[in-house]
Length: 178
Image (cartoon, rainbow, N blue to C red; front, side):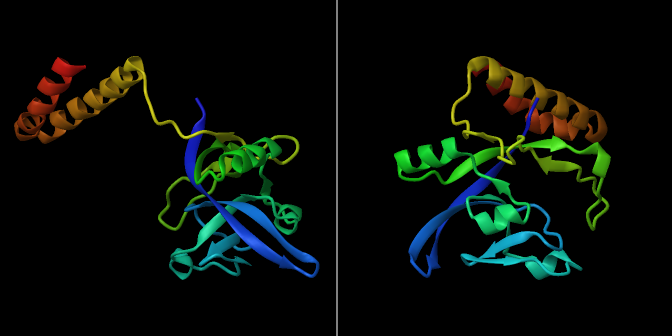
């Protein structure tokens, strides 16, 4: 199963000596590290030494772009097919990006949490994109309910009868309507 994360798509103009061009940027809330390209108030800069994420509060990490300067510096490229769809639709504001578990480069954030996921790119350094899902089949909903039920049952074993009583209404309704 793919690990997907929703990211924002932002279009910014760039002034050139011979005119103006637009670039797309995929931005994420993921942890910012030294050397990462970031965006804040539609301004782009490269992160300096990062001693704490607090210094970059409100900044978004740029994980993919059409800007050749950022691509040359290691930022993933946005596929041409997405750019064509973006133009055709007059804009796309959010997409799901595929990540993979990078067990060769395990990292821990400032809270000691395991953070081994990296953006999945193909051999052309193009990011892997999926549309945002906005509808679910009955089978998918029932699978989500099954997972939620299992979590609730586990929690009720730990928390006791009070917890069971609170969620009885949920179980009754969901079993009746799903």
